[in-house]
Image 1 (cartoon, rainbow, N blue to C red):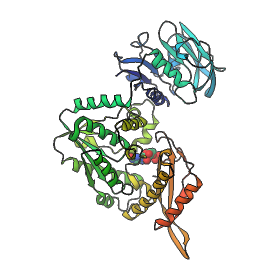
Image 2: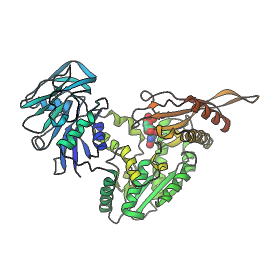
Image 3: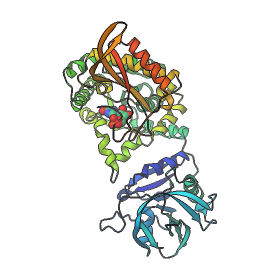
Length: 508
Ligand code: XMP
C-alpha cells in the first residue's frame, strides 16, 4: 500500500501527525526512530517527529537516513528539524527560554511548494527548548517568527524540508495545508486510503492469511470487536465463530439487544450466560484491582470453555486498534502504563492460537468510518465505550446482583434521556456510579435513608484525557427526578464535575 513513514522520537504529538495524514486519506505508519524499515517502492516519503529529548544530549536518539536522504522527500518537525540541521553542519543551541504556545510565522519563500496556499503570515504552535541557531550547509531559509529566525528551511540539493513548529496541532491554523503540501504536492500520494479501500484490502488479506481455518472472536458489544467481526465474516463467512460472554455486569438488557443485532448482521455467535459464576466469585470483594483480576480470570475461563467446543480453530481474532499497537512500541510513552490494566490479558497464550488483528492499523474514528462503509447499524457503531469489567467498577464496594440491578435502572434512565435529548452522540462516554453511602431524604411523609448515585458524562478523543460535559441544568433536573421517582432504593443523585487528569473517567 502506498504510504508515508513516520519516525517517532517520542513526541506526545506523533500520533496526531498520523491522524492528520489519515484524515487526508493518505496511509501512514509510525515506527520507533530506531526501527524504521527500509523503504520499498510504495513508500512515498518520511516524516521525522518531535521529541522530549535534545539533539545536544549525549544519548540523543539517532536515525540512519542513508536510505532516505536524496532519494525520497523528508520532512523534519521540531526535534526532526533540529536533527537534520545538526547532522548537516548547522548549529542547535538552547533557546534563551523554552518556547511554548502560539506564534506568528512569516513566510519568506512563498514560491516553495511546502508553503503553497499558505498565507504570508500564519499562526503556528511552538513547543521546544532548543533553537536552530545556524542553518545547515546548502539550505535556504523559508520562514521565521519574531523569536525563531530559522523556523523553516529546506536543503537546496535534495528534497528535505524542516520546520520548528508543529503543523499537526490544531493551533497551527494552516498546519493541515502544509502537511497536505508535503504528502500530496511533494511526495505525490494519491489519497486513496478510504474505508472502502481498507475493507477491500483487509478482506483479501484475511482470506489469504486464514485460508480454510476456523477463527474464534470474542465479541463485547463494543465498536471494535463488532467491526472486526463483520470484516472477518466477509472474508471467511461462517468459519468465524463468535462468542459473547454475559458476565451479568452489562447494561440493562444489553446482552439480549446486542445478541439480536449480531444475529441480524448474520454473525455466527454463541452467547454464554456466566453471570452466576461472576457474581459468586465477586462476592464480598471490594478492592478495585481485585475485582478486575477476578473478572479477567472468569472471562478467560468462560471464553476458553466455550472456545474449546469449536473444533478446528487455529486463530484467535482480536479488535486491537492502532493506538494500542503504537503505544506498546513507543519510545517514551507514559500513556502505555496508564492503560495497561484495561486489558484482559493472557487469552492467546492460554489458548495456543495464532492471533489475527484486522483493525490493528486503524484509529478509533477510522474504525467507525469502516463500520459505516460496511453498512453496520448506528446502534453498534455509535456506542459509547464501556469498560471490560462492566458495572462492577461502577459499584464502589462489593458487587451484588441487587446493586447491579439498581445501577442498570439508573444507567438506563440516564442513557435513554441522553438519547432523547439528542445529547448521546455529543458525549464520548456516559454512565452512572453507585456510591457506598446512604443519606437521609423525605418521600411523601416518610423519612428515607437510601442510596446515592453519581452521573458521569465526558468528552474525549481517545480516553486518555477527558472533560466533564456541561449538560443542561434542565436535563440534569429531569433525569434526577426520574431516577429518584422510578428507581427504588435511590434518593439522591449527584453529577461528577471532574476532568481527567487528575480524575479518571471511571471511579475505580
Ligand atoms: P479511565 O477510568 O482510566 O478510563 O479514565 C479510560 C477509558 O478506559 C475504560 N476503562 C476500561 N476498559 N477495562 C476496559 O476494558 C478496564 O478495566 C477499564 N477501566 C477503564 C473507561 O471506560 C474509559 O473509556
